[in-house]
Length: 277
Image (cartoon, rainbow, N blue to C red; front, side, top):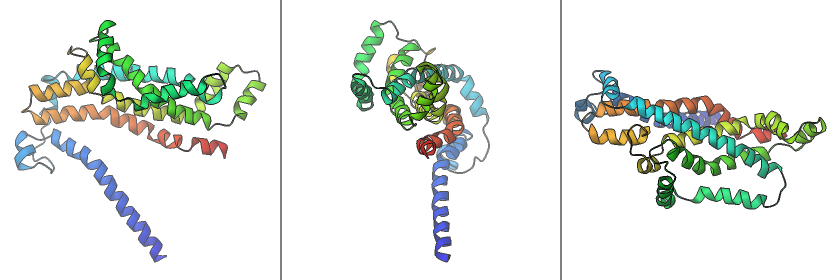
């Protein structure tokens, strides 16, 4: 019994230590955003702010177009997520639940997208965007982001669809349901945790993406937050507190998305076994 309690205590200690290591960067960033330059570099770089500088957030909004960049990131991320889910859901269902010629070839071809670095295709992508007259528009980012995230989304959804028992579809067909109704009314609701997982990872990927956005977008009115933050560093390099405030604001949506969908992400790992059991 004592050995068991000792193991539990040791495990709790490790988990608490790991939690502190995960949470501290956010706490440090929050403190960073409320300090003056003197505190950040000399007086108090790691501790609680001596004097709370809430004006750093005011400066972030006044001296920096964070509202416009934030809006652009929300639009690009939202449309990209919708596009990826609309395209990957039926494709994942088709390759995991149906038998048709070249099914394996199509699935392999799409999965290969996971192994192609963005840096390899950035030059032809820039040329293509220019030829299609999409430069400095939302679609210059939305279309590539949808293409980049299709492979990963398809992998998650295909695994989830494949784990469901075939009897569920057979019962629906016996009741007279068409393939489309079966897909929309029965199969899609069962893979909601997988959809939530895909949405979470797609959002984090698109929200934090910098390389493509910095090359394809030069107009300030269309820049996303990562590109805008980079320009902020160059233009206002001395106002580190305001830059920290911008980073806090940019982190809020990612934290909210993860908090909302974290339970669904966990369910996605066990939904197949739970249904089969």
